[in-house]
Image (cartoon, rainbow, N blue to C red; front, side, top):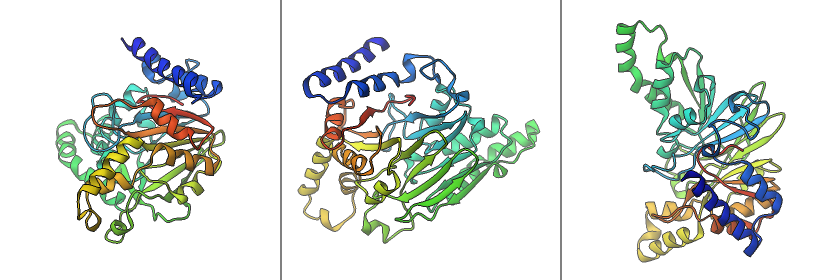
Length: 352
């Protein structure tokens, strides 16, 4: 059944290639070379090398679902970037911890985590990550970085672990304190690139994107950001949730891989139509306004990618109409209107 499903997806793209010329032959081959883990043992690169120990820089999509809610087919947002076998985690939505295991990534080796923003579909698995790392025998601290509010969130997740820690310390004699393992850091996000951290493998920078309206930003300290990882072999940028953003274009300029959220155009149109039906929509915040105005259509994604001169686009955090599967050809067609490079529609456990 899995093979049949994969063949169907291949057929969709091949038909698109023949009818509309959506992908170059090279792009098509590249997309199929980076198949989800269901097509080979989890956590393996195309050559069969375990990703957790492979040299170079690898991207693993741990969760590609958009928004709050539980999906049996996709985890919420999370991405692993492995540099010479060392994993870095970006966002940790519901299902990401389980998919770390499915991808054969050793969570005990994660020492740095970055959050693009603090919506719950990017943070829901943080308490699970903390407590399961601790009971799994973790002894090395993890540094967690994100926009203002991150340090407070980390302290709250540590507090969640306290009862279990007290019980197991008394009953099992565990010597490590949870609060000694997890250190949160607020990044002062600005419209210009700012340093997040740098170590011997990677340099990480961030910039404010456009996921929150000006009205919302004026009433709260919270911000949303895109992040860029530069290693000796590759550069990878992750948009975070955002509408078209000039700031983000500056951050991702010349990047090898641009992982970007996407909302299909029909879904955007549907939300905008709902706004028109509400005579007071322009005077108040609402879920409808937030969704309609603060996410990227395929054409927005392509525009940013073209302006920045990126080499490969990976569509992530996919927002589509309820009850539908990702419209592969529609998403790719939209990007292709303004971008001529390679495009991949992301799936959970896909390795790139």
